[in-house]
Image 1 (tube, rainbow, N blue to C red):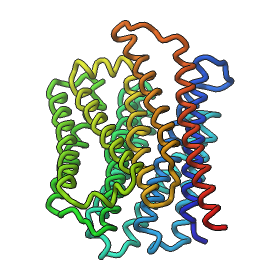
Image 2: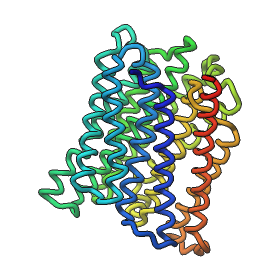
Image 3: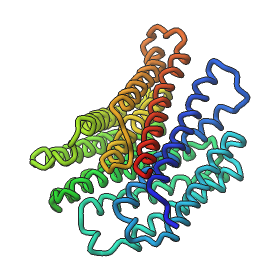
Length: 406
């Protein structure tokens, strides 16, 4: 039995909707009394969004691009089924008990499943398929995914020895998040973009690709120091973090400059919607790198430590502004996702409005700006736009696939 790509897409989109519902519940808790624990819903929401939507969407793209013709169906079905069980288990157990025996079991199961997926990528793809920049980029992405898991594994010993109040507990979490959204996800998306070009017989030169990866690697490793600036390290740590931020800019510049010189970009912008998606991703990714670079400076990092909405807004910027539109582009380009301009505009409007409101919460405290009346209600309403757009994408994709098979 083969796991159909359409089923994988429905599952990922369904879990995205579930994560959005969790986010709406968090918004409501600020103005409606609900019989839930805020922190527990946060865990369920974040795990479902990162693992249920982003991870499974990236797994679908990697499976479609590389594994579907090589990995045995029974092997992938086993890995995928166990992965799905672990994600659903976390989604259901976190709201009830938070971090406890059941949710920890499912979290651990997920880590082993992710290792299994990486193992299948290494084992079953033929050697002659491993020379392209797209494959190498995807391989490095999966390697960074495994590296990021050091964070979750460290949490148990830290809690038992030092306690949950130890700053090293936060370091372990930040380590995981940093290499997730700065390395694994970004490289997987770039690998998918390169794969689209390579299907059109457009290959990045190995020398150019190697230079990009070197800048990217050092940029990601050094910019991790931004995540631990709350420990108040020496000034030289800020300098290294700034260098890391600059290197990430250089990696982006190197990649974009190379392809701007090519006359082969038309295959990836063959529609106005695809062009809009790529421009959005590049713009938001540039802003994301700029925010990271500014966060390396002591003056800015102090504000981030003291006003958590700045960090929350940044994470939403990355996951909803950079990663999700990039996934939309790759799925739409692959003809897996039915994405209309209307649904995309609704999504973009909801995202921009929520970001403005989230950052305003911090800025009004920093600059003593006037408070917005009914801010949380407006934040809830703006988040509903994202839910409406993703629901519309799910329905339009389902209708198109049903029509194609009828």
